[in-house]
Length: 66
Image 1 (cartoon, rainbow, N blue to C red):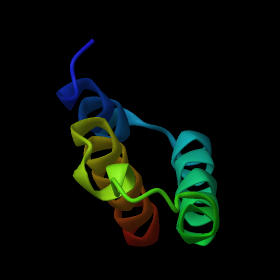
Image 2 (cartoon, helix red, strand yellow):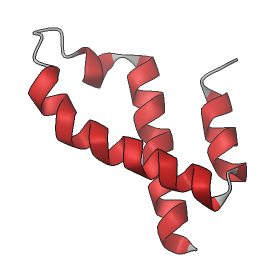
Image 3 (cartoon, rainbow, N blue to C red):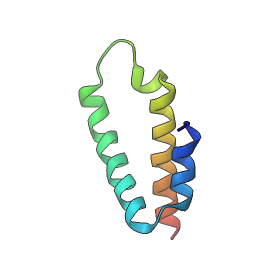
């Protein structure tokens, strides 16, 4: 699998899948500042974390648009 695969998944996700992604996105927004405190800021610099964050954001936008 490639990083783009998660975006492709979001584009074809059904409502329940989008809701699950939305929940995960909200959970991460609340918990990343609390638990991701290392000096490397990997949650901001890691390509994998950025791809996941983008996909979660796209899922939330798609869900709101339905």
